[in-house]
Length: 80
Image 1 (tube, helix red, strand yellow):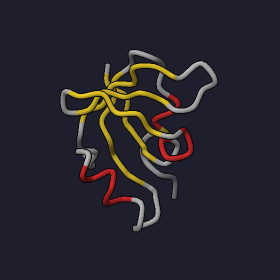
Image 2: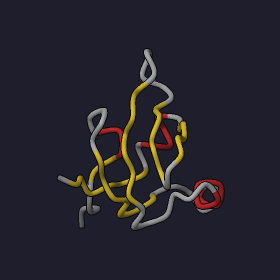
Image 3: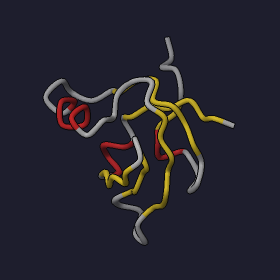
Image 4: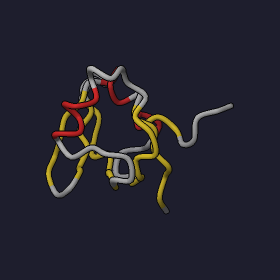
């Protein structure tokens, strides 16, 4: 069975999506949840750093930088 959505890193800069799953180990999830990144939360991919890591997203009105390997495990449904 395939996971719903696509990795956050697949969005283009400026694209918006909604978090549908966070496929990280249980020990890594609380930090993201404390920053407001929960299933159902709208996010916008602001930009990739020049070398592609980290990436900057906008979530709940503020900007957040995530390592690429973390962002690859956050699945989003693109919004049009």
